[in-house]
Length: 299
Image (cartoon, rainbow, N blue to C red; front, side, top):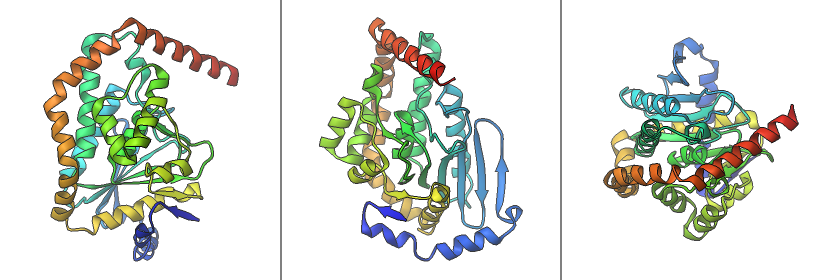
């Protein structure tokens, strides 16, 4: 069973299921090229013009400086290929889309690396949210904080109906806050009132709750079909003339992208100053200790 936020999206299923079936019957060598370098696996389907980017940073796809670099590099490489018109962003771990920022990057950091880390995070947002490609998030598991950011930067979000899965911006529960550009993205996605509440409370939503506020577009009951459904939607985006899709996205997203471009240095300076505060480091310390305690209890 598939649940949609809007009935208007139901047309995305029609016309592409048979194409996907034909895709499955072809030799993988005929339609796909793989790159297994780095922390992101790139899979190019040259027949349908869809690239699949698989985050592969075990165990939970934490977003480190190196992960930011690999994601941006992979997105740009796909964009430079004129045959590619859409991207599916997914995880190699069916339980976790991405756990968000790597907290070890924030814990007692060196200012030089912390600055590069945040600048790379900003760049990934600009690269993914500003991509010319149709981007679809295939979310089989949990996507908190920056993992939610990755999903929101995409044009469409498909999530598994897993009771254990959660998605949202939970930064305040860690003693930190989402940056202004991420807060704006969240409120643009779910609306101002829900956005204010979610940001203040650090809310993590179940798939059904996320669907109800527009944080995701579709729920798939069969977890094993999430990637298949995401690919179907990506093919729909790939069917749109590229110049039209790019112009449409630019009209909607250019103001936010330009705002970060203008405020980027100030945003970086504020973040570094904020993270170096004693009370912020103490909050991260406490949270890491809680994680270690929970892990010890499970083992």
